[in-house]
Length: 481
Image 1 (cartoon, one colour):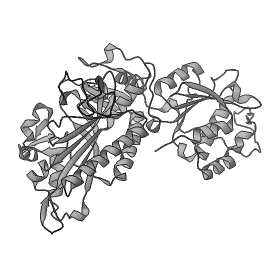
Image 2: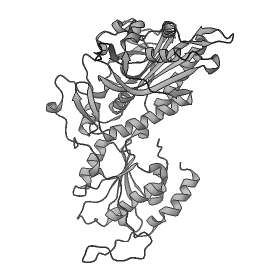
Image 3: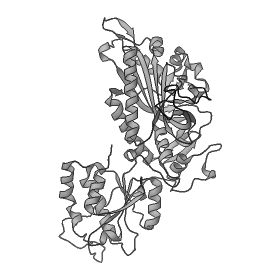
Image 4: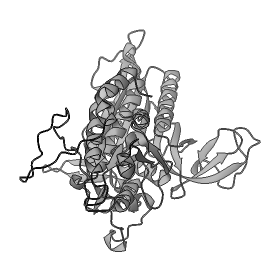
């Protein structure tokens, strides 16, 4: 619910909506006649649907618009159809303005959770020296997944898919790290590169993507495991805030290394990972870590393992001293002697979370965002120009202005669909495809003696007719970041 202070501000300012809207008569010159009403200065809504850059124009994405050999899925089709992404070359996309807004909100949520457990944000170079990767012996191990290049002097580099070598070198070069400064959790949210052999499914498996990667340094194995658990708990909170059902499963350490690993999977039929989940206890694992024909649960012994599919959206690793020993990342212990730090690394696929959320939450006809990270929270639809309820257009514009003015958390979150040459029905269909959490239709009901606004909640599909006070109470509960 709204904070009391916000509610009082709204009640003082929103009183204009309690009296009939005055539609000013116009002179022959087209200018409004003088009026003594206090709100005669008309303010046009700032965020207009007609000005939003969504070049796909909500068209169907047919075979002719797909890149050669590229498979498609629901999230890719809906995102291209809505003008959220546009293909550049295989596995690479333009992220268009609404997608960037959503991604920036997701980054803020991630920042809150990572900093809540002591994470400190930094930014490391995407261009990584081959010398570091050769020192860790991953230059050859990674094979063709690495994008490799030479500079003008003939030195080898790669575009970083992950930054274990870089961050460990950074910490090792400080030389003055004390046990009092540990655990040290350093993370970044940046663009990553991986030369996928078969990019597919839009943002779910690309060659260029955004990822949050965090690296921890601890005084002991016990402390490192405590840090590991705190990060896993933070991931669980993150997905709960987004309203996404996420399963933590045991996983292979792969070419990252270490002795403990978990994936965070969103169950989905399109998922490329095969999971085994116990129906009795909390055990879950990627099938690659177990015998494929195993049906009994190794944890409780009584449950039966059921196979499902999932989209990997996060991965955690306990690394031990694998990298810290190689690069000599040490700290001064209680005895003021150098000791090698215990490490962990923790990834979240930022753009993959966006696409996976759309994949699992949306209908075939329209996008459904996690409310917290929807590009915009509210879309207001005025009547069609020239219709019998055209006079409600002024009421719709005033509503947008007052929502932004007296609900501060919604400033910049309310868009006005000014395409009044189109019918309400067509604009409602577009709004359903774009996935605004709340769509407010200002029509005949708003002109009645007891005005009502038609409100569609996209998540539930429920339509409500709300008074001004009820609209206030509803939108006052909207959470934003």
